[in-house]
Length: 221
Image (cartoon, rainbow, N blue to C red; front, side, top):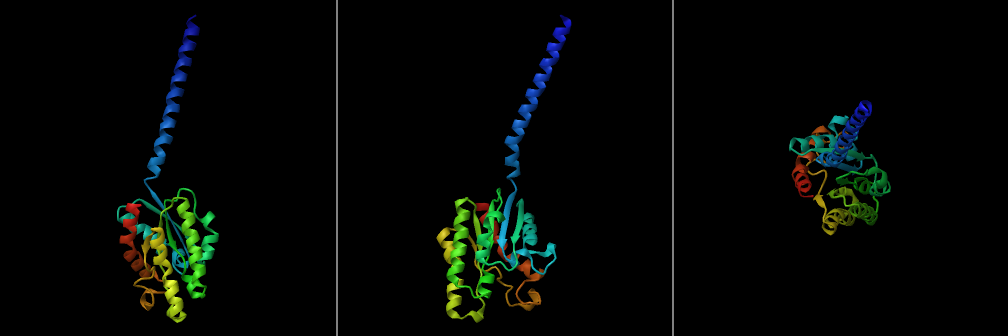
């Protein structure tokens, strides 16, 4: 009889510990997602300007931008989804695998290669529109960075191409930075030898100029 009581007591303790452990696990999984979501995951979808062409990894745009955002007090992780040579159509075609679940915000930087190759602005606009509409259907906020056509493309092309970005920003209520290369384009001291891609110092200026509007967008998203 005493043995049975001891066995029952031991069994009761095992059940109690099991129930407490199960409750602890349940509470952990309820709490941990909210803890994890304190960190903001930004995916930078772009071309070589995002990828960091010609630069050591630590000098790339996404690395410098992440450091600047963290220094401002934001817990941010930036995923570099830049592909050198990519066009807006290429970005649209790889959108599904480039943007993983859990993405909180997209920094969209595409179109420079479209202009360099003379792609019809209507094609660029259609591809960027498709990207924006797909991301918005997934409830992912978008911070759009604008691009300008090279001066040798002619007035008509420049007018049509340059107008794509502010038009999309207004139409879809996007976060917007008008010109990605503002303060850097055509300055030999801030670009690599190809006169197209910013060097470390050039990237630092891009980040510095973009930072205020991006921080405001993140805080209000």
